[in-house]
Length: 202
Image (cartoon, helix red, strand yellow):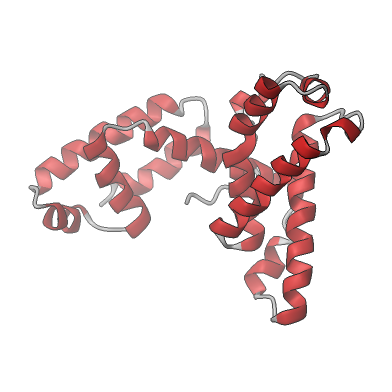
């Protein structure tokens, strides 16, 4: 996962969300609820995992938030900012979880450190990581497989070629295709160019 802090990044889909979506959900609009879930779920999971360092628990926590949101929709108060409400709710649930956990085990230094990171920075990082992951998932299968081996496992081109029984030249070509497509998908995000260069020097 790329680590990018203090970026002026926003989630494109979230910017287009209906500001009155909570009022529609309050009145039982299932389509609006599904739209909210599809727009924010993966970003919120990536945000939660920065606190909890556990993807499964993060997913469970975010899923429960949406369950509670739907079950208690009729009692929902006016929400002025959809994004702020959701991220604040997830942060509070993460902190509550960590408080319970701290009673049974010592919290790691990494977890304690992340609670000191500015809230806005964690949101930006989660949204950028979500955008990167979605862009990677759009790559052709072979490009995606090679890119993930380089990105997640830090393998050299020669190591990837050996593992997949390919020539180094083929790996280089597929990485070139992957990087080109990622740049196209993520153009406009200046930090991306620097991050992607990490994977072009293998």
